[in-house]
Image (cartoon, rainbow, N blue to C red; front, side, top):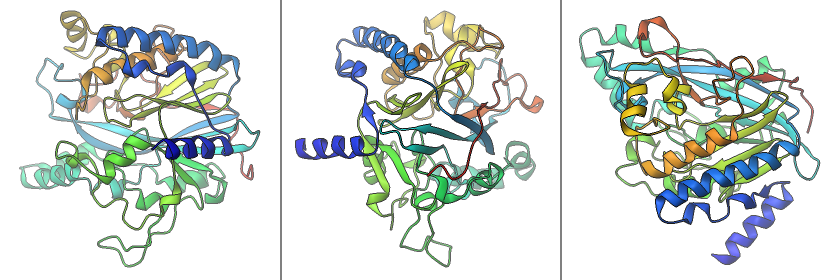
Length: 378
């Protein structure tokens, strides 16, 4: 194990990636109240150094699809009024361009969700079957489901080709099928030929614990992962890491466990300050419940004394998820348009559609764009 860890560190260094010492050991602090304090202090210390190192060259987000999600999961059963059982949240793909620590220009794709793959996760497969059986189910499907783009068409819109992409990553692998991103030597059930890589020879950055989860699912995790999603995928297409890493000045992947064991958050520094993206919440209301106008969410904060209200579909470790969301809040800068709100962009965000009122975002960023995405950087 020691040799494997040493080899991984060497591989990351060769790729222009380095670890973040400020967070060493903070997730091992005990008791848990002390751990939360350690996480908050480490995040504050790292934020100062992170911002001094510089900004990314360019970043652009594009919506992929709106998918159904249970209200009781979205806000940890906090919503206190009768409402539709399902709301919608938008999967959003983010393209980031930066120079790594070796000075090499890089292009990263964050959250390149392929809707056809997500539909095969047991949770969504079962939900689809249930919707089909209830009266008015097909009408409900039209209410909660909408497609905007596929990851490859997003590249075309941004003037990029698959060969422009160095890395892709997801904050975690819930409802993701790596075969549809990285390609597979095997034929996926229902298809006629093996999948080719979506982004050429790009590799997937993944926390070692997240990849291990997909390799050996616990029954409490099973419904949210695409079983068999690693079939025929070349293992060398993965770049695994542990803990927290910096990809280059202005861009980092911070380990934020709890929602899943290997969850990580994208952190980028821009001309407007630091942005954070993950699915620990699906709206700013999750991170800032004291400002929420969604019925019950502010009361959740006031009655339980909690500064966050988690996206709680799995609760693999709710205390860790709480700490991770505090870590994200500490890193994020205030929004320039309204400084009451933080620059946290959920990787999958609650839609603002009136049909779901009053379960709509109190404040919505709706996307992010800085600089100019350019082709040919490789």
